[in-house]
Amino acid sequence: TLECGSGGSFRAMEIKTNDIIIRHLRIRNTAKEGIQVFGRFNIIIDHCSISKTGDGAIDVNGGTHHVIVSRCLFAECTEAHRTYGIKTSFHHNLYIWCNRRQPKIYKAGPDFDFRNNLVRYWTNTGTNVQVSDGVNIINNYYGPPAPGETWNTAFLTSGSKNLYTSGNYCEGMDVNPMGDLKTPNAEPSVVTQPAKDVPADVLADCGAMPRDEIDRNYLEKQALKKAKSKKKIKKTADD
Image (cartoon, rainbow, N blue to C red; front, side):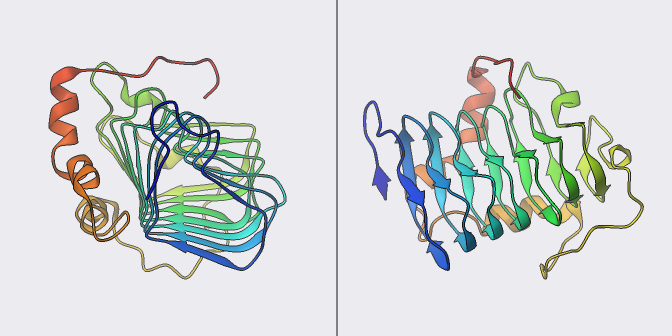
């Protein structure tokens, strides 16, 4: 566990090398990003827990390719991700009580794939695809938003092409017609569940193991606690 303490460190980790696997790591209370990836390739970030970051939980910069982010827990982050990326896969992650960018997929593709993720209690925006070419948004489960937020911020897109959106579940917004493709872009080798099976699957197997008390609180108690408090993070102009 990287516990950055009161005030936090600027950034917990920078990845400036190739061929790396990060697994079962916890990062908390950073002033800026939890993990920043700088234009590298062959990177796997799996079963990590990142919470209360002052900026992105994991940000993936331009020039990065062949990245997998899977089975992670992202909680109470100011942002989850601003991510570029070619041949990049985000799957079976939990986003809970994060403010925005879950993720913001920006100038990404080809072959950026976001599937079987659970996005709930967002306090600004959910997923945002901007100026990208060749992105799949498949079988994700959105909702509910945080108290006082609206369903129509679950998914946003602008300036993108070759966007495939299918099989997603969002009670208050139909995400699936928002893409412009009828068939998906290249897909990673990920065992994919129907969207309605995603909550049980992800909640049973995400985050650093074995779980500590803080992670268990997010999974078992945080939703009830926050729903009662109706606390939310201040909105910002940039999604």
